[in-house]
Length: 583
Image (cartoon, rainbow, N blue to C red; front, side):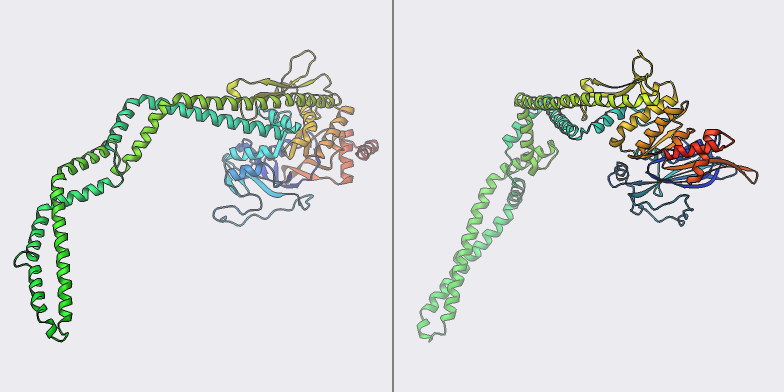
């Protein structure tokens, strides 16, 4: 709800701060007093178009701040989260402001609000026409400010009406009024399942088409890579073996020399054997002193034999490697050439072969794959359509009830010749969506026999405002916008019709906050709070001021509305009777 409105230097308003209550708030005043300025100022805070002409003459800047109280589940909070803005009750992100916040001026009729967090929309306009917008002191674009404003306030008047005039909102309004959230959620889920299945089928078809275009290449590549049959780590193994084979001559020369030193007539092995034989003949005569030497010579002889065996094995291996060097080089070069050809590494060639083989298999299995996905998509489509048709039937029944309820409200508002119709038509297949297969439009006929037309085609602005009032009364409990504004909804009516308007505004005020600009005493008397707009001269300057009326002042204001410039005792008595007649 709108909690307060602060205006500075807007046209004839110098400084003004108002507090608003829940329920029906009425604004009255003589013609030309400046009621439209008040609405223009609020519109500025809600993202309406700005212009330099709104800045009071002599002022550098005009500013308007509108404070709203929003509950924890209000849709506007989702917009704030989406845009990364601090939520009500949270500190704004970014560096602290360069100047301390302005102290809030005293608010006329102020009371403590304990039914929501504060959300402040602020707009400034320079004398040159430059505009800036803020949400809780965080700078935003005007488009975002307008989007947020549309979630908080609906304006219905002779010259500006939005919200229900947008046909795109009508389906959501009908569904909310009929309580179709569960049915709509089921249809939305079925729609997503269908679309995901269709997308999977389309992706498979596109992949098959791409694969078919490169089938010859795939067959050649898979055949080549399967023939090559690369083993894990094969490149490193071949490279190591090749390096060893390339050094064969030097290795063999060293091995032969080592074998010559260890074997033969003068080799180390023969010398060790001779030493052991010589000592063996006298070892028993040395009293154990040669036992350690004999053991060491025995170990050395065994180690020499083991070394000779290892060297001979190496020589045999080198002979074998010499025969396979050319074959190893051919294999290594073939592997590396394939890696370059397919722009990968040798180690990744097996994975590439598997991938290409799968794409080739997709071509060979394309009929089964596409048929399976087509069956799944057709089944998902039927499930969606079944749910959408059930939702459509429920909507049509709800539309009939809505039309009847609105019709009951029209006659007392002097719209008894008008007819309200909720038109539900089937959309083309291409237009189906997560909310079903229906196009919903609220239409009206104001003359008997005339075909229903769009809401905004009603000839009279006053008729349109009253029509919106009737519709809003019926839809009051299903709406999400917490503040409604009706500008001169009573234009051209009086007596019982004006009383009917006042009654419906009061009823609507039990569900949401309603601000109404009125010239009707019957409407003014129904307000839970009453404000009057006055134009005065101050130091040779004409200014507009707004004040909240107490009970006695309300009698005087309603008496003025009844009798005109001269307020009579009879007018005061009639005013008091109207106030006493409130329920």
